[in-house]
Length: 407
Ligand SMILES: Cc1ncc(COP(=O)(O)O)c(C=O)c1O
Image (cartoon, rainbow, N blue to C red; front, side):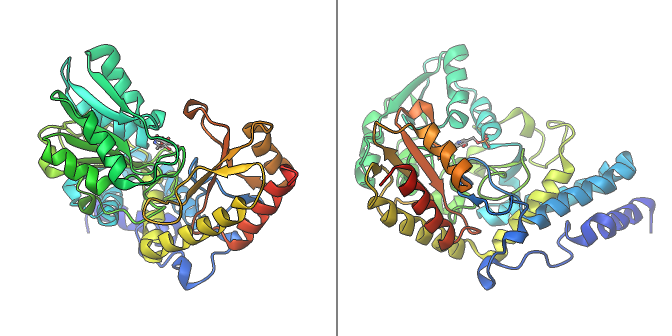
């Protein structure tokens, strides 16, 4: 055995007892057993309903990350190198490609959704006068990159309003279609809107884009890990998401898909040489975090995303029904059905302030949610329901909201 393979073996044996490389079974699938609060490091008694902002890591993910880091630091150069560390992080990329349903050479690891969207926008090399079509509900993570091109490269942005309460897929697609102009090069939309949790009809939008010779780029920050996402089935050209939200991976991780057909058009600087996780285009990457992300993806894969999605939507629908009965709240998320997602948003009556309500839910009831984003211009609160949440969390949230609103 040469030195590098013995280093690799030692690394595998030492790191979290082999969990990192998938050598040992880690967390059980969530629906084969009840997720225990002890699977996480969440403070005791906390009902965490804010995965859409940032997800909690499972203990096994933290151990995989921490274990890898400790071993790495024993001899950074030996363990980091091409022969030991690099093949291991490629395991995460392989897992991620399988999870998203694309080929390995279509999938790159990033540090966030924003980082992935930046790579797409920068890699497109649009010219002055080219147009990008967006909705008025895009999160800054999927908007900033286009605004940069507008500011510095003369690219034009067309913004399609999504009217509140518009939950008909055909109308949403028609609104986008009507905004396409001869110079439109890209349609860039969120898969799930962070404002209301509306699940955009991406299959139809991607087909529309294709029929008009336009690229379809998707910000999937609020979708991957929350619902079953297979990028090939969606038919989009590029898709960016976060590891640190619904995938429950380490913070500062993300996934980026660029379809093979679109790769000649979208050429991010970091991926010019290769889609491998570490290359001349990327420089040094966060090896422990990437190994931890692999562990997190492996867990959800085993849990089966179809089941996870069903669980999340059931909780979300229960919460929606219960909140609907509370005075002072108006739901602005879609009704149960094809456009619903595990994000649920409620508008507060004017007499309430969303930041104060959210703060009180935390301080008085140990319930973590988020006030709606200032840029979307409405006074609301948003709940995220994920696979570790339970009907008990939902009951607690309903009771706490009822009390805080004096209903
Ligand atoms: C729709 C959407 N896009 C992008 C982001 C930014 O994600 P990241 O911090 O991973 O860049 C968020 C975060 O909430 C989001 O909701």
